Image (tube, rainbow, N blue to C red):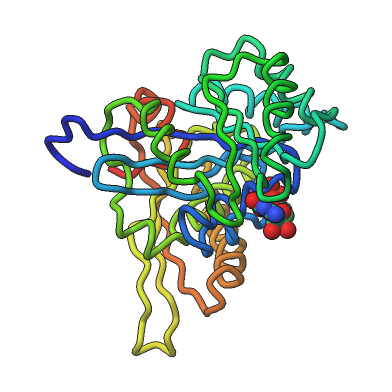
Length: 302
Ligand code: GDP
Ligand code: MG
Ligand code: K
């Protein structure tokens, strides 16, 4: 993390919108293909970092907020609640729509859900390469009457039109803050975040309600072991808040932790396309929960 970061801005941005409006295309354009594509794998119901854009004066952390659609079942209900909370905690919400489509039921549902949310919402009208410029005002007006957007920005994620302007405007809304993620770590090892989420997911699944969602998984090391058939060695630490939780995560004679390792390793091997040697540790860190919700939720590494 940078010291003396006066003037440096950083924050969390949630991109929401109906399927196929161009969310992944946007992320691919601003961050690079790999990250968005990989995090598209539907493996967790939880918010996750989709990509981090680091510049000289800012860092934008884009968060995937799943479950923003009319819930069909109990779990959907739960996910919606989690997403709603996330949307209150991020610094900016990017609500992306397709310029070719009229405001539909899916958009209505999202807008209703945003009612009363204090977070600034950007209306990002994507695919403007598909509509005539004269049509744009009408589209903007139809959305304007529905919600008090902080900004309305038309773009083409595919062709890149106005994307730089959108990023500059986003930066204005970010608070002063640290560079949460080292720039090179994110661009060189996007897998890191996904791997920690995969491990977390297994712990939560195997422990059910006994372990709170606030646990964190920190990846200590990812290294290719050239002497060992190029196997990738991953070392990770699961951080819990209490000794009792440590006991639960480890399980009787280490059985639960072993199972976490077996399941996580399978997924990580699929993700990396390589044999993986996974080493898991469990650590108690009592004040973990007292840190800012953001840091806790997004697996901040200190
Ligand atoms: P997501 O479901 O919101 O992540 O949407 P995707 O990023 O997967 O995009 C859905 C489709 O829309 C893909 O075929 C993209 O190529 C296309 N698309 C995305 N952005 C644009 C754009 O700005 N212009 C045009 N013409 N197509 C786009
Ligand atoms: Mg997508
Ligand atoms: K997505």
